[in-house]
Length: 310
Length: 280
Image (cartoon, rainbow over all chains, first blue to last red; front, side, top):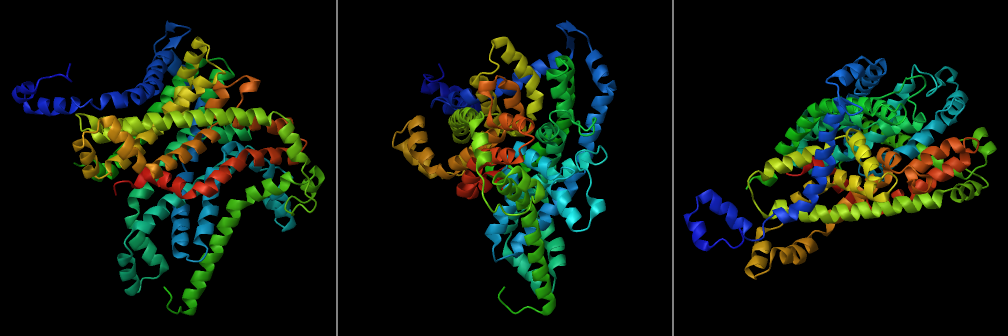
């Protein structure tokens, strides 16, 4: 009906309405967006709606906040959340390492492409493959320990994955190993786009390597590093399932040393047959990530301003 | 840059080079152990895990391939290709809807879409599984493909919208003045210009679906429908007595990715950085 609106209509209609309908007359954006929109609405909208419902019910009956008190008082859930919290400590390490790598690559002329490809390679490897290979590498009598023993560092040859004391830290080491490539590429891409003049000026003023990059380069990389930090925080809170699942055969062992919130959700739903507890924990996790998502959203908005300002 | 360096500067350059070499070595070591390990016998691997395989032995590959590898491979290939193709088509049309028309609430809508990029899949797992079970769609490819498409759309739409917005308005106006319909403009002006972002998006999404584990684990439970990643996760406990077989399996699972990576590295990097640096 909008399509056939007579032209007089546009003249008499309020200005802003006219502008809207005038656009719609030419078939409009809505048909173009509809298929993708429906798919996204279904996957995200329906899921979140159903998640909220499930977390207030037990076998179809409304139980109020009972599931929440069950989950929140479950020692395993608290352990899992605490482990996610500990994993957050890898984020500053990642930021520093990525920045360092990016600067080193930036300063290298010879072989830069090769180094860059190598540093980035871990990021594209599938986590199941990484998990299995590191699992072999880090056995008590595995390749790493045999190398350490051969070099005389007997006391450093730990039971990396078998000892609950360091299993989670070993896991963080592997996560760092994989994720550092992403930060490096991200920061390097930004670094290359910085005008060379500022750096040259600082160099002429006698700034050495460290002063140059800490005082001139770093401030210009604030936005991209912040983006990376938020991105990685989200990873540590809610995207580490694969590592834990593969390296511990889905158990979060040894003991519960590497149980994280995602594994808690997975186990509640598919191993302990308690989907309502899983749904509740998932809702809590979503709320926790929301904080990061809002931060992410704001940065994205600031960054895409230039693109969407008409 | 080519001016002469003082000894201190030269020491700095050398030490930086050394650090880089060390970092590179650390990045490559697991891959080295995987590939060399796959070519050794069990004894060789246990005795000297670091050495080069002097007499390459392909039994690991034969054993791995004779397992269910071909089935897993086929499943993953089918799911990956369909999901990525569907995502790209839906994302391209939607992005054109966002880029070509200015409508009220568009930026808010787009903002919400962008923030969906970071919603963890585990949050969607329980409701979608419940629904899939009701429909009898567990262990069907269509359910998993639908979920993947939904999860990939936000980023895909975002990336393409940004690109479409950068197409000179004059080109689009010219097509319109010539009387081209929106569909026609999209097909013969916009799409032909969009090769690079479409390749980027294909590669980024391809790698993501290929590597995805959690959803594949839950939605493809029957043995003959398993995906490659789910398969290799169980593979390690089955072959715990033959490390070369495990390593051969891992190498097979990684090979397609490495090939895509080598040929599409530029595009892949462009895709990753697009999320953070567009518009700066």
